[in-house]
Image 1 (tube, rainbow, N blue to C red):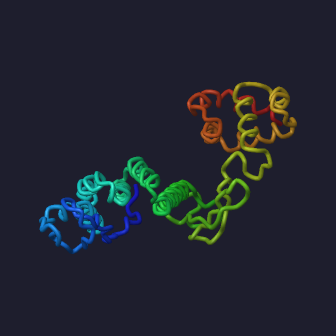
Image 2: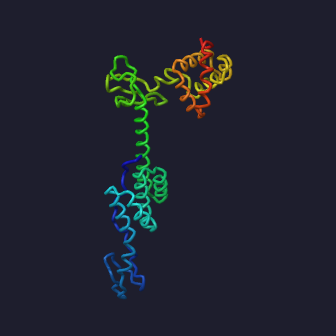
Length: 275
């Protein structure tokens, strides 16, 4: 859920009404004129109509600054009905929905604003949202990790808040975790099938799918163009990790995990084939 996003710029600069009187040909009107110097036409009502879009937009921005995000939607939608205020009103609508946790609606309004010339502002917002989601995913993954270092007071304990991201490494951008309790670092792939493996993820998961399907290591090696030693090494690694490896394989193959879990017991019984 997004809790804070950059806010639409509070630009109160009025582009100004037409310099020509709507009644007579006089073209010397100033923004401050409430009447036409030539024909005397009262322009008060016209000025109010011309100022309405910016007034509505200003109300929406004020509400956003106050954190009243749901209330800001109505004036922002009203301002968006006017061409002069529509681009900035769409930004404000996106900001409001983003703060309310509706990323889909926020992106829809922001992208429409981009088509109206607000591309830099929209890119800033979309980049912010992408970074926020990436950080949230890192935090979720960190809570599922545990320190494997012997002697650590939080050895094997998940969700303790002691695991933090040190950096990403390798072409696959694997996380390197740091344990705040003992100071050690360890790879995010440590408990994964691909830890210290040079086989591509797609190939490794294809190999495991073949083994889980009941085929022999020799058959899998021939079908995947891998060496028998590679197939056996991946099979042994999977057996050592246990049934949890099935979820990793299923995610890599975009296959329901339940389908593969049913095959794990049979695979485990045939582990002697991998020796």
